[in-house]
Amino acid sequence: MILETYLHKAIENNELTVHYQPQFDISTYRMVGAEALLRWKCELGHIPPDEFIPIAEETGLIMPIGEWVIRQACMDIKRFKNKNINLFPISVNISTRQLMAPTFIDRIRSILLEEEVDPNYLTLEITESSFLYYEDAKNNILELRNLGVRVSLDDFGIGYSSLSMIRNIKIDELKIDRSFLNDSLKNNRVKSLLEAIIQIGKRINTKVVVEGIETKEQIELLSSHGVYGQGYFYSKPIPINEFESWYIETI
Ligand code: G
Ligand code: G
Ligand code: MN
Ligand code: NA
Picture 1 (cartoon, rainbow, N blue to C red):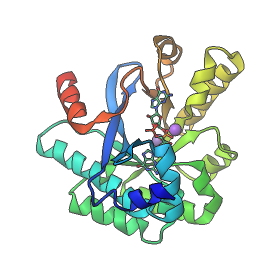
Picture 2: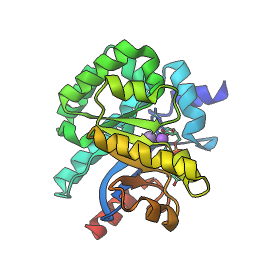
Picture 3: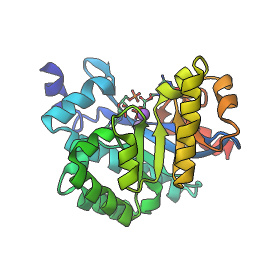
């Protein structure tokens, strides 16, 4: 597989970058956090994560690459701290294989110490597929939360056992998959379901982030629900320098 050959060299060739997409409190329009999203540009051009993340997962390259993203996010938090810029939590996507690695918790602890980052500013986004390995996932999530790191359940609602997960494990945040919002304006049943999921999050004191906000109409649908949102309506994922100038202007 040709991509794999290139991916092996991605870190040492400095081909990886992290883009940031801000998250907002929908009712107050305040920025409340950002999601780190990996980007890769090699000799073949820009390769989207949907193409290279699965390869990284199959080959095990997700271990060094995933760690590189976490460190990068922590370095960016530190950079904001050193410039006396108001801090906000940064969310990093974590593959199942990373979460399950026996060394994962230790690596996270070391990175936080080395980069002098308060664990409260790091959120790790996991998906329901991690729960195929229920016992290990549960223990690692518990340990992450004991460290002070926040845990978010990404793409919530499209897995096959969403409710059993939040029944058995305390999670800090639910990110409702963008398909729910997408269908809400054309399908009343989906809209009711979206509102009900938001209520579930609130009732169990879990932050709720609605993904894929693209229009004013969708904002209006959500504005009275006291949730957070993320999507192209606010901003697409952008490079750190662009993000920083934009953030400094808005606070
Ligand atoms: O940013 P974009 O929409 O292109 O991301 C596509 C997919 O790639 C999303 O599902 C996102 O969660 C995933 N992704 C982006 N960055 C990372 C990363 O650093 N690690 C992992 N495991 N997945 C990522
Ligand atoms: O799976 P995950 O939620 O991590 O995926 C995040 C992906 O969603 C990123 O690749 C990001 O580029 C993409 N994304 C962010 N905002 C929007 C949006 O408003 N609409 C669509 N279609 N995709 C979005
Ligand atoms: Mn995500
Ligand atoms: Na998602």
